Length: 78
Image (tube, rainbow, N blue to C red; front, side, top):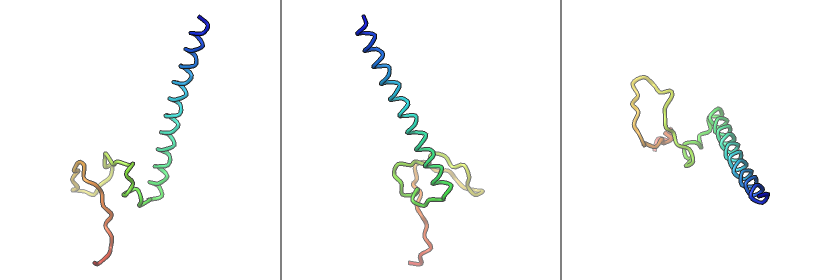
């Protein structure tokens, strides 16, 4: 019976540790993303790991279209 309890505690420890690592990883990812947004990092447009789901601020008369990628508009005259 003692061996079963030990195995149960070890499995519980690994599951809880795994959940804690996932939560910490998500917190760090969101913190880094907010820092990049505050810094107006233009590389966010090319970052494949970030998906924009909702626009929270847009000019008057704008239309929301699903699944259309954002492209950087340059001032080049070519």
